[in-house]
Length: 284
Image (cartoon, rainbow, N blue to C red; front, side, top):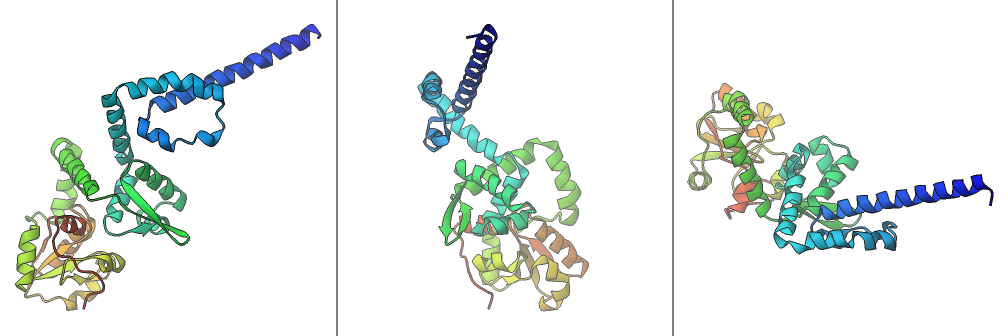
């Protein structure tokens, strides 16, 4: 073999070995960052060589050698899944009702592809579940523990992050600084016929579940439908959750028109999770 051909062969062989070594190192790093349970879902079929898998085995042994570290890695994966505003908003919408990716993308203002990527991250973290309905995949919250997790996140942030306090005072309290109505109080007063319960969510969310006896007027229709409300009776308004802007905007609008109105302390998902009575279908 001519000397230059031999040198080129050695160079190409060295480059190939270098690429394989870098691939092994990258794979090992990726695998060492996930917990053992996640390895069941790892895409092993994507073409890694037996050398790759043999060389990363020691890294997997390190991961699995400490149960506490493995658990913390799984907890961290859930925390990372929550670490995006769009994913938190997707969870808020899924707390109202089961949804397909197209409907969720439209509600949150994302492309379908982007919304799908966020949903997959939430699913891998165990925060949402899904089922197939014909050609469509429908997503839902995994369980009520997700609501409790979001409530804890909100409470810790409210107590410890100054910017959240500023936002609450500048936007939310400016529109409604009165103490909201507790769930049990609303249940008692609505059963006695002392208040009008106003659900401000879109009709499709209302149909999936609402406070018994509630009247559904979506916020965008409210000003045109004020004649449907009795100005002599107090109104309690609610929507998707504690910081859903629908109820705050509605309270401000109704007070400008002379109505006595307060907000429910949170939204329909928290009402459902508390085990309180729930109605479905269109209002009678």
